[in-house]
Image 1 (tube, rainbow, N blue to C red):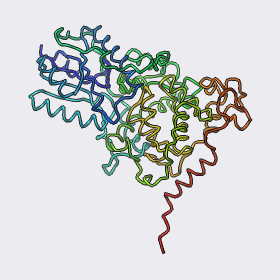
Image 2: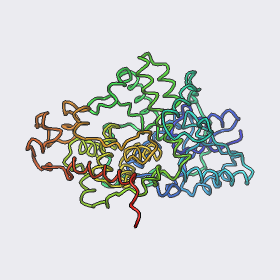
Image 3: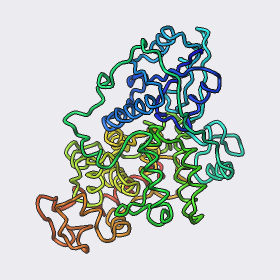
Image 4: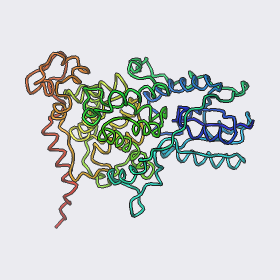
Length: 473
């Protein structure tokens, strides 16, 4: 039987895997391979939390392949050289993979495809990560969509009949035992000092963990998703984001489960819209690759950002700003590798508006500490919070962290969980202890910045963008 390489990347699953299925359908014996080449994604090479997840996800994929009679080969990059070498060793006639949309990866993949074709190999990529390819959704004028609502109006009708998702193969052909593989430990993915040890009380990387998470969401949280998704004190979020990022479950499989669920239409539509936001982020990244580092809205080139103060930045990172909901979110991030989405918006707004630091400094911290650190979602989320991104809002949005906490964590349960210093503080005081002369333990007595004054300063900086400088007489 002829052989083909199936190049795994962030599609670490066997269910609904178009590249793997294409190899099988074409009559090839697949040789699964993962090439470790993080430098090829610089300056956005995966961070520490991502690497910790990746190690476990690769191990799980290897086990799943072994259970079906195959095995996963691990190789070091450069990618092109690694694939060409393995093809020569194995006699593979083709290489199949699922597409990614990060700017550096897109450029690398084009080079690899050209090189393989020059060698006379069949090289083919597939859509395994999105419900709609970025070049298939445009405005009526043929331009990329820059605002979510019209984008979703284009995409949502396509989903009514579902999107085909193929089941994982029950068995796979064996891989030649003479083909060498690196050890997973050789990749050096483990964080220093076992920083991630507490992550795994919450997360189970791998396809089976993703399926279990999806099952739990549909069974336990979907019905109340519309009301509970913004409540960090409840288990209302799907928590599928890291599984989707690493491709342990496909968006098509999630879509199929949501469309089949016996639940209220409003809850289903809200959950589908969240998948839509993920799609939107990847479409924006594909069409506007500069948005990972530059303001999407060029008018903000003249915004008066503050120079980051190392002491203040460290206090923010460590969850010691003196603003409980902000600190709770950052401590949740450090302990679990994840932060509730509503809290992410509050934390990012505080960073960009109250501290007035440019969003890229915060995005970098999230990139290194989030297990779901996705370049498209991270860039979109931070630019949305900063007000510099693809946002139709006609005003400069500034979240009041105290008001947000009172609304979405009304009993203070989330704050108490992540800030034990405040565990015994009465609810009326827990959201703004400084207003009640409460400063238990070594928790900061006051916020590192006055919320009202910093809000006014941010609004003045924004107003200056709209006010031309007076001309010299």
